[in-house]
Structure formats: structure tokens, C-alpha cells
Length: 136
Image 1 (cartoon, rainbow, N blue to C red):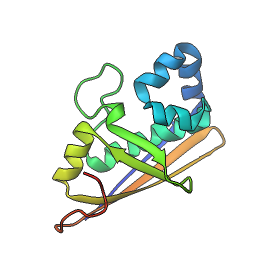
Image 2: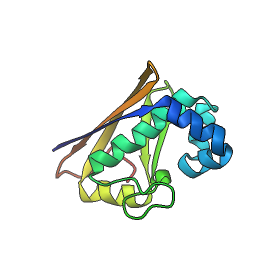
Image 3: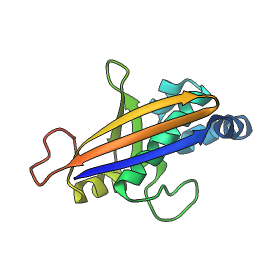
């Protein structure tokens, strides 16, 4: 089975949230590793936000958001980079449990930003075979 998720985010929306709430906003949405990777750049933060949304969509759940109910928490989906800079997804908590339910073997992630928008697409593969590639 193939699962997909895609999301697009207005970079200015994320820039305004950072300007208004500062580090408090960043800490509530992103892990410390994600924040360090983005170094406060609104384009990078928007791309990671889109990646979290795209991953949640392929899992068939929503993001709980800040103070919301249901779905998975922002910190349940972590978007980092491998040694070559390629974006990767690491699942925790409810997101990890949902991936197990779907028998997901791997998730591929692609990010881009241009003309004030950030976009992410996530593609997951699942099979009845034992999961070998993902840590969950």
C-alpha cells in the first residue's frame, strides 16, 4: 500500500507567528533539533510545518495543534535531515503508533519553498512483511 500526504504553507504566516510569539511558538511546534536545523529562518520553519502536516495526512490523522484536541501532537512528527541534508521523518508517540497500525515500512519526504510558499510531500510504503527500515 502507498500512502501520500501533501501540504503547502504561507511562509509569511509562519514569519508573523515567530515575530509575535518568538521562541515560545517555535518550542511548541518544533523539537529543539528542528529549531536548530532551521536557525530561525521562516522558510525553513514553514517547510517543516508543511512536512508535519503532510506526514499527518498520510497517517490519516490530523495535527492536534497548539491547545487542540485529537490527532497527533506537533512533536509526534519530527522532520530532520540525514547526513546529506535530505529531509527525514522521525515519528514519536501517537504518530508512531498509527504508523505501526498501517504497517508503514518507510516514509520519503520532499520539501521546497518559493514565491512565499513552502510545500512538502510525504510518501509512505507499507507491506505485510516485518518492518526493517524504520525504527518503530
